Image (tube, rainbow, N blue to C red):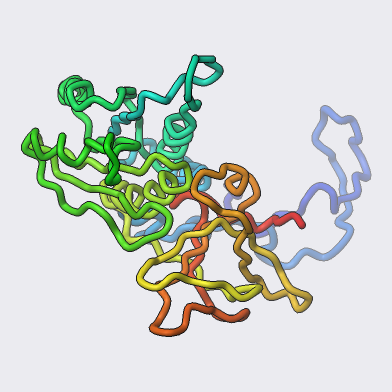
Length: 325
């Protein structure tokens, strides 16, 4: 606080000490190196945040910057939304744990660790993980165990298509679940399923292929999590295509993409090649998700420069503005 009657502060770096140069003593004589302006270097009460000024709104995510400001204002506690509690069920007798070696046609379970990390980044908490073979009874038993754990959302992977071992839709109906939809006009991830369990929980059945699983999580599960967290609907960027792109009739297409600036500094988006739903390498190379709308009648092509929707990897993720290549 300024002493009574004072209105200006002069930084010590702008003062020449003439007498009393002992570092432990207060100088007795000084010379100002410049004439200070009245009121210089004074921080006035309310200059940063005025009385009654709003510093956060409901549904806003509390970042470290928010916490710093709240702490500076003396606000020690705020009401927040609880992280939604999620249960994961991986289906498939072909799945093995990371690093396990087994006889016969087996694959390592890559979806579960991916979902575990992505759900945490999306604001959820994974509290149950189950793995079952292609047996309806084992799936039902897993749901029974989950029922005791007070979860908000159940996510299963695999067994939602139309093959011999795709038992999840029938198993859910047999337990009294209401299937809200099964199959959507997207690529990849068309067999995706959503149901309301008899206990009231929401169940999302994701396809087993990695890209299909990731698309279902990003564009169907994460909007649900946003609603549970009290957040508004996500708004994508609309960026120009850096090269022509082809879209399928009747299907909204989700592609791994990279962002890049052209010679004029215009930010654009380019889909990555070789994006079959089993491939994992595009996950490492991508900056974002590119969404192409269904093709119009007789015209599946989008030209370079056409604007398309672009989303970050996750709804809470920062945009990768420091781009390489």
